[in-house]
Amino acid sequence: MRYVIVGLHAAGRSACAWLRRLRPDASIVGVDPEAMPPYARPLISYVLSGELEPGQLNVEGPDFWDRLGVRVVSERATALDPDKKILTLASGRQEPYDCLLVATGSSPRPAGVQGSAAKEIHYFRTRGHVERILAACRPGGSAAVLGGGLVGFKLTMGLLARGMRVHLLVTSPQPLALNVDERVGAWAAEQLAALPNLALQTCVTAQSMEPEPSGGYRLTLDTGESLTVDLVAAGKGVIPASGWLDGSGLACADGLAVDQRLLTAAPEVYAAGDTAICRDVALGAPRINAIWPLAVEQGRFAAWNMAGQDCPYPGGLAMNSIPLFGRHVVSVGAVNPRLTRGCVSEVAEDRQGRYLKLVFDGSSGRIVGALGLDAAPRLGELTWAVRRGLTRDDIPTHWRRAPLSAAPLAARTEWLAKAAGL
Ligand SMILES: Cc1cc2nc3c(=O)[nH]c(=O)nc-3n(C[C@H](O)[C@H](O)[C@H](O)COP(=O)(O)OP(=O)(O)OC[C@H]3O[C@@H](n4cnc5c(N)ncnc54)[C@H](O)[C@@H]3O)c2cc1C
Image (cartoon, protein in one colour):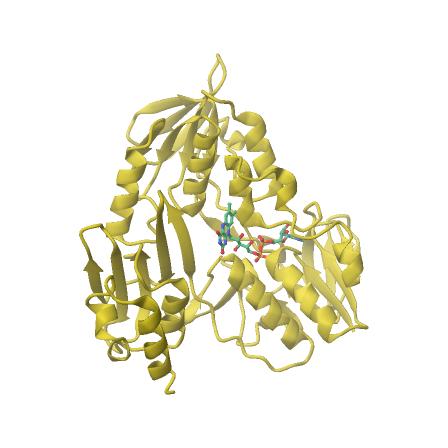
């Protein structure tokens, strides 16, 4: 049996490790142009902020793939022929396969800025990206960050830590619009606005970027204003890195649709991670949830199925635990206003601003999302509640009405046992 894994980051690496465990004698080929050894992508923000050295990104040693018995081909895949079962690489080389996993993840969404300098916008996804940003930033310099989501936020905090003055330009009315609700978004905006060296502008989009004769760049905004800065970086979300599959017969513009076994529409071609459109547990509909633990989990399920086991994937769920300005935000499932239309929310808040919102489906009463700011119930408990599909009536009143005064551990034990029918 010859397995080919395209993309060797979170999903691909997890799949390789599980395949090797299940199929000790199989041939496994890994294809990825990114430099090895394996590293943890989320940690690049800590390198930008100076909390980690670049060498500390590595999560495995240089001999990892040899030890695992995976032959690595350091090239980009450019085409797939599912009828002939052949993968074509950028050099023209062809890799035949019996069973293939697409784990090519996602790429930064282009910032949509016109102008002759737009190609010099820094994106923030790889080890190479953070190295280039570090080479371009200098204390006392100025930067514009386009995008107020999690990546834009991490870029901003990192550049501030490097002594830069930052203009954070957010298209939405508030930062972190996809991860939190209006209440927590407004609190985050207040905190950002109070930071020295930071200018936050919301409801604004950069339209064009030109070089300045004296150095730096001039950004023109849709408000008509312009800004001159030394560096422009963007965190405007991601798009699935599935364009190389155009021509394969697989519908891939928005990622790869998979069935419960993570199998695509082509026989023996599976997908996992940021490229795979899987069932979302909270929404009950297919969706990409581009987060690390789900990529690892899907890599594992894909490997089990590729190895011949019958392992339906239960579905993914958005979840984030975000340290923000000395406080702790947890967010699970559907919480942003775009995804919660027709839902019913219950909110509890105290004088210290600790806050918990539980979001219930308007018709079934099932909990579909939860958002906490220093709230007593934590990410694991909230995730469990959404994954189990608990309804409003399953959740104890002290969680719903006075969650901040609830004794979390006692409540947890009693409530988990009851909900699990023990
Ligand atoms: C700055 C930052 C911070 C983040 N923080 C968090 C966090 O705190 N928590 C969290 O859960 N998630 C976080 N994420 C998201 C997380 O990193 C991703 O969800 C995860 O890396 C997805 O894994 P993946 O294997 O699906 O894809 P990727 O990590 O994108 O890996 C895909 C691999 O495929 C390769 N590839 C792409 N195209 C081809 C091709 N044509 N041929 C061959 N190989 C190809 C790439 O080189 C890459 O190595 C963060 C991401 C960033 C950028």
